[in-house]
Image (cartoon, rainbow, N blue to C red; front, side, top):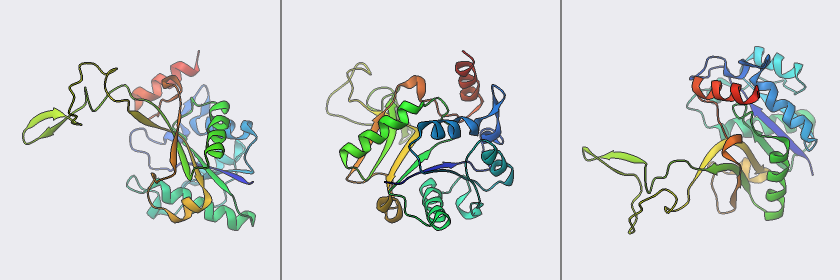
Length: 228
């Protein structure tokens, strides 16, 4: 079996400028995910998909491979990441002249995952014969209890249920996609346009390793954790 690891790092991040290159403990954010992928020793190849020559140089310095620049039409904030991962798989199969049975996407904005998370996610994926899998954590807020939305000029609980819930713990369990680990069967990635299908599963991670850096608050929190 051949496993490909794709790390997507585009130039035009919105919440934090040049997010992939922001320094944490003296190293660019991108380097943490590259290092985890290499240390796992499960990937035939670790590549970075980017639209930036600068990011490409940093990726190569830390041990990833990067030889193409991602097209602009799949590098915007409105672009489907699934398309970027699929493009990276196709480019990799042409470049390495081989098929990759399984394709991972490790998000550059989730540096708190560890190598065991990657290995355990792969084990669950293989044992379950799934088409794809993505990591989640237990949600802190719950649409059945304390998430509201505006409807007809008033505010209502986001998700209705015949039963009233008086605590988050008693509400139906929901999960957050923590944007850390995605695993795809090759055929699913090449043919499907939606992330969730009939044979999709999830891999549960603890909240303390599930921070997805979206803004400066998240970044400062991750910096604090990694300095311990």
